Length: 496
Image 1 (cartoon, rainbow, N blue to C red):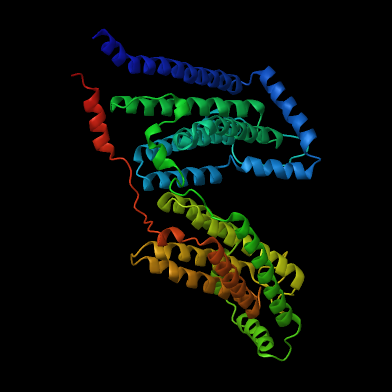
Image 2: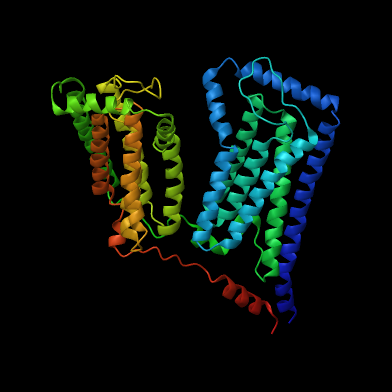
């Protein structure tokens, strides 16, 4: 009887010990941030002198090196709001798809708290940003605490706690180390770029640690109150959800013969490039007096004669659907959703290779063909690439056609036809806007169609993105029955 009682006390004792240690860490971070806040708020001169000295030293070290500044800007963007909001949003959508609402709520609450704390404390402290001899970056608002340091600590820390159970035990420590290094580098770049003092970054880290600790502790209390065991944080917030959180657990191999697939893609890429080169050179320099020449002469002129302010504004917005930022954004949203719904890597690989192949084929073709823009007003001004083929149109074709290829056979719902319609409407709209703006000839559009059709067909043949559908896979996502499981655990915890 005594042994049973002691066994029953062990989870409670372990929880109390871990909770006390965690509370001490959270309290220490909170006290540290409070002291630093007071020193900054009351302008303690030794801290201010040290901050300014470090800012000037970094400015002298970094400012003369342009490539270094570019690298620092790229790293610092990983802690910016656009990237962090995208990561958390995609994670929340994936968690909801995988039927993990508690973890989704945790991410939303933790992320929202970080977004609220940053501007509120900056307004309260009112500290100005560093002034250096050679400004190399700028940022709006006040300086303390660093929003990038705070946001990266909260976002990457919360994502790590949520998705640790999906990793095998041997990868958990490396994942924690990678997250820690990334958070450190984001904070370091804010100092090196001269937009924050050292104390701003340390303050952001301390506040981030305190807030992340508070929300993690609240989640663990929630589990305890629902009759669930409370594991150590190194196992994540919800260890039993590991299988549901795994990206693609049902797929052992992405490709059965990866070496032959790589060889086929390389050979196919060369052949597609050869076709584009031949067609581009013909319509650019050898089609005088042909139907293609008439088309490339009359169509841009027809559009140029019908410019109006309203149409010009509309064409600008529609053209944006085919630029790099829009294409990248749609890809970064679609691919994680595919992983969450169908738990397969092949469709994601198909989209990634479609966009990578399109970009490389476009850049190579534009370079060797070197076709001038139409001899009408080019509303977008000088461009870094030549006219053939249209990169905007080719990217739009490859992206939306690839999405339709993946979605259409995976559901029998009526809305699958919306993806087919989008795969037609988006390229036509972007092509019309590019022709209207005088940036491309009609045969540039044909070249984009040629590029998209040949490359996507080659990828479909090699990658077979829908192979799992033919093998019987369906998007039936099963997860634990949360209420039933809670009741069972609570019942099992009752004595007798």
